[in-house]
Image (cartoon, rainbow, N blue to C red; front, side, top):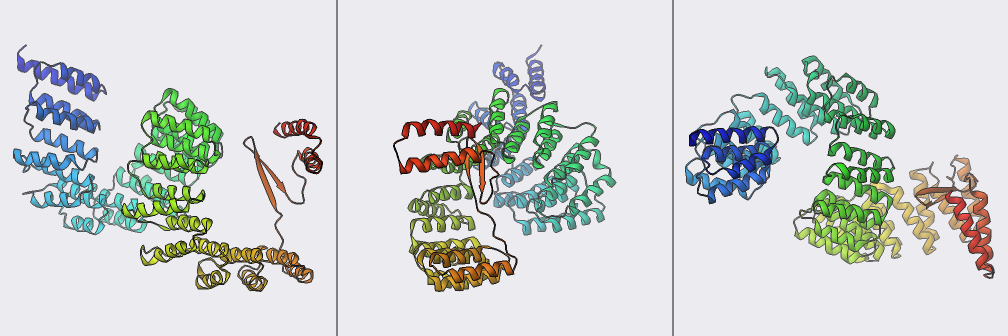
Length: 636
């Protein structure tokens, strides 16, 4: 066998191994070759790129240059594709510079790859410059430029590119429809779909999949739009395509239309793994945990999404212990991803179990996911709920690329633990980092200032909402401000704020003010506020009860009786008060005026002994033994 024959044969083996999923064996064979030509390098490079192993492809491309192998247009196309898939904004321009020096920038496939790379890396100016400098363009060039505009959310520019296209193929329509669908622009998507059909361009499976996914994510109460698209799918004959069926199934699952979801699921001749996962999610969304578990057990294959769906479903339905048990089972056989850890951390957060949370955190560190946004945000929230604000802050610092949710979660964490100055410091850092605050940010800030008595700083924050950040105050912000002013005794100022923002939510603000009047003994203002509450919502008991209690506290029994009679006359019933306590993860509820709790007799005996012990502490040993017995009885 000659040297060239050996190279061709080995290169073919490398390509075959990579295509069959044995890319590590392909690389081993590549490394063992005594000689390699450019075709062999390109084969290995393209294999990495096509399999989505972007970092491996970029590393190999760099090694190619260090070993003195000159890349050609195939090499540059594969490297640019890898940079695009890795969203590596720094690698792409470097490769661009090298190919310009090499003289390959004029090649059409290379130009198309450059546009695609810049578009995926959100560099619209770079994509536009390459597009405008191309001597001639094909349909791929136009579609790549259209995608770059849509991906950067520059929809005006996208419409101009779309209008300038001489041949609008289905891919172009799908790019635009998918872009608007991700923004929730239902009407625009439907109009584009109708235009596409009238232009004699037949919608394909990707068109219908995008439209069905849009309808699934849309928060409209009526599923009319999705049902209409479903009918079009059936008429066009695309209901046999797995991708379309999965999107239809997802639509009915997210709408909690479990009967329709089951009908679709049973009609699919060859369900894919996506189909099984979607159906499991549908059952979980409807609270049918046992049915979801049965599907999970029946699924021919289980991937990380299958396990994560079960964990998230258990947590969503209040079965946090089962969610954590499922997580433990999962890591024995499947490598978890960041969404898995996010779901497990959410379960720990709901239980407020610090030990379990630390265990999941340790696993996340072991697998290297603790710095991911979704995992980090969950850890910040979980530690804050469990009272460990120090660990919450450490988790916040571990997040590599913080988003708005990260900053808000940390801000709330400090605020809930009375560390208002730390919350304000986080806010200042957030603004310096060019992260734009939203309405949630200001709720956290105002709450922190209220709980710490920082009234002047709270006022400044409230004023800056609209004047600096253009965030309009809503009911929650007004309620926080009223609470803050009332805590400081500024009742008159709080009253003025209620009147000024009466359209936001007068009832909740008045209730806060009324409670403050009771604390500060301002009965004159309380009467005015109470009348406002009753006029706003005459069938609610809050205003009547608080006013009656105030009269009773001040000894004005006649006035209190008049308020009670007014309640009876208008048919307003007071909701019975209730309290609850958690005993070994079991919630025990006590409602005023009822003896519905099955352990009420033992509880009453325990309370009698508590009272006796407080009055006469001589029976300590006997009381301890008896209370242990009673608690054991409650737990059983």
